[in-house]
Amino acid sequence: MRLIVLALCLAAAALPAGAPAGFEHWTSAHLQGFAQSLAPKINAQRIATQSLGSYGNHSFLIAHREGDGEAELHETQNDVMVIESGEATLVVGGTVVNPRTTAPHEVRGPSIRGGERVPLAAGDVVHVPVKVPHQMLVANGQQVTYFVVKIDAR
Image 1 (tube, rainbow, N blue to C red):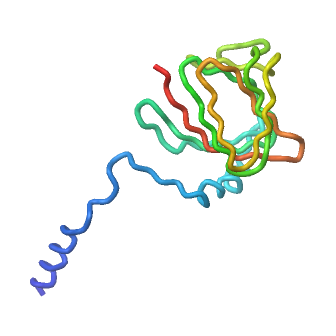
Image 2 (cartoon, rainbow, N blue to C red):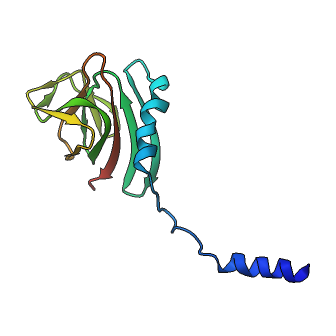
């Protein structure tokens, strides 16, 4: 019996230690599944989000929208968005209307004056640089789920 226990302990010690600390892997199926799991959690602003992790100068989250978002401007972060499902229009550039600071380095407003409208669909990837206004618009009856990487600019 002792030999079996010793053999099992030695075999366990020989197994690889696993992925390095901080490594994450989100499969496409896992990310697409958030459309269903977040939909029941939609708030009054017609969005539900879930943090996926924070790693020094960058973090990950998943968002599901069933309506227009506010205009946003991040003073210290870049956004990279990967559309997982659905479709939306991203308004980028221009000026935030009636801007207000909602958190440190975060400016929001009801809309954007000017800016370019960019249609988004599943598989699209966008990079929004620091200090660039942006707003996600979702048509009535539509939805969009997207993966976001927030990267500190400083």
